[in-house]
Amino acid sequence: MTQIALVGAPVEAGAGRRGCLMGPAAYRTAGLQEELEALGLAVEDHGDVVPDQALDVPDADPKLKNLRAVAGWTRALYRKARALAAGPQMPIYMGGDHALALGTLAGHAAHAAGAGRPQFVLWLDAHSDINTFESTVSGNLHGTPVAFACGLPGFDVLLGEKLDTPVSPGNLCLLGLRSVDPPERALIRELGITAHDMRAIDENGIARLLEPFLERCARANGFLHVSLDVDFIDPDIAPAVGTTVPGGVTFREAHLVMEMLHDSGLVTSLDLVELNPFLDDRGRTARLMVDLTASLFGRRVMDRPTRSY
Ligand SMILES: [Mn+2]
Image 1 (cartoon, helix red, strand yellow):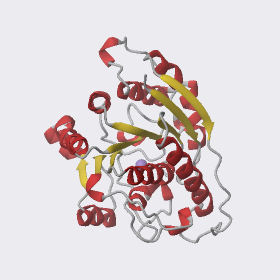
Image 2 (image 1 turned 90 degrees about the vertical axis):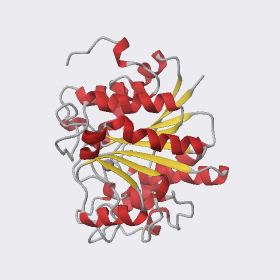
Image 3 (image 1 turned 45 degrees about the vertical axis):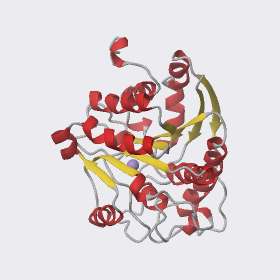
Image 4 (image 1 turned 120 degrees about the vertical axis):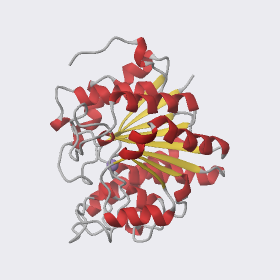
């Protein structure tokens, strides 16, 4: 039986607006645990992670917002992810803004390196989140986890040491892009990261783009970390996010990705990020994220009646 660990990561220090702190509570209210149990999974809620103090990090940086708080979260989540990766439960990190992936992804990559297997990452997001401390214009650190995970320089302050087990950029796939800063675009090209924007999805269909990546991961016997940002989905159906960009993936495209991930049997860890319940419409986005997670664990949309809002 598949065992699941639900881990609350109420991080909002990395985002430009407040509210992601309420994300884990919204997932619990929307019945994430119950929906997964209904699929026959054994689910344990580990409660919310408590961030480190990170007193060695400057509290205020002229350019980087909430640097100390983000470092504290990164350290605590790194340890939590590393420990869970070594155990039998598959973790679902209930965010929290995308800065939580600084810790979760680093923790899973460290475990993969120790196990001698490659870490793959599927980044489902409107943004590429590959800004460095140098390139960020907003100073919001939720825009940096891909750069950190790839081992780009300048991030040592987060863990208080160098990240010595970065993810190989060739094992990354960014899907759903429609807002990428010029320095990010240059980095993606330079590092050879697979990146599919909405136009590529329109022209090819999302399944044709995802398939080769999953095949590569399977051939390499890789671990697969999936990071699902609410803004991957079109804001018309997922309004509860502080960084809406029009023209996101549809209900069916999002579910198809989850269903393909389920069929692949490759996923070893999952982030649910950027849900801002303060901006939601009667829990609609939280429920959609729960439904997408259920699809990733084997529920079929067509087996169920449509829920009304
Ligand atoms: Mn993101």
